[in-house]
Length: 141
Length: 114
Image (tube, rainbow over all chains, first blue to last red; front, side):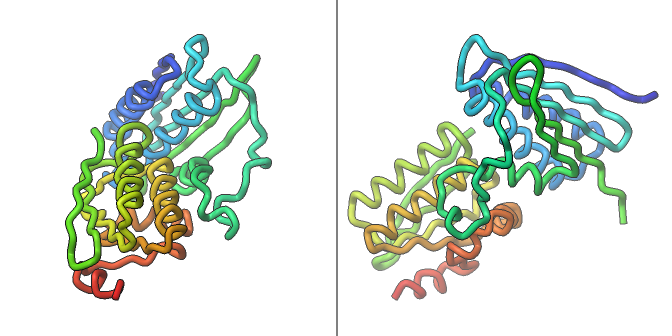
C-alpha cells in the first residue's frame, strides 16, 4: 500500500505555523496538487495551526501542537492537535451572519471548510482539540 | 515574508499600494499600523490597491475589516482596487464582497469618491 505518514511536534509559537505549512505544502506538491489547490491547502494549514497555537494552547510553552500528515495516492490527510481546552464548534458565532460580517475574527474555520474536501473537529484525549483536514487531487477534465 | 505598504495621493484620495502577504504577525500589524496612521492623519478617502498581494489569511481579513470600520466611523470611505482571483475568492467566501466596494480600474475607483 503506497501510504506515507510523517509526524511532527511543534512549540506553541507562530514560527511553528510557517514550519507546518512548509511540511504540508511539500507533500501537497509531491502528490501533484494544482497550484491553486496548494494555495488553499496552505491557507487551511495556517488557519488550523494558528487556532491550535493561539486559541488552543494560548502560546503556552509547555503545550505542544501535533501534526500528522498522511499521503495516499491522490489524497492528503492532515491532523492538527493541540493540548488546550476543547471547545464546542456549535457555540462559535456564524461569521456569515449579517451582524457578524464586521467582526475582527472568527473566519478561520469557515476558510478551512471552504478550501478542503473534508473538515472534522473532535476532542483529543486526554486533553485538547484535533482537527482533520482532507484534500483530494482534482481529476483532470 | 510580510507586506510592504506605501501611500500616494491622487487628488484627495489616498491610494495605499500593498505588496506581499497580509497574514497573522508582521503582515497584519503593518497593515493595521498603516491604516491607523492614515486615520489619525485625517485621511478619509482610502483606496487599497491589492494587485500585488499574493496571500491574505483570516487575520489579514480581520485587519481589513477593522480598518474599514475605523475609517467609516470617522466619516471616511475605504474601497478596494485590483483584487486577484484568490483574494476575490476570499471576499466571496466571507461575504465581504457585500461590504467593500471593489474596482478593477484605478481612475474609475478614484473618480467614484467624488
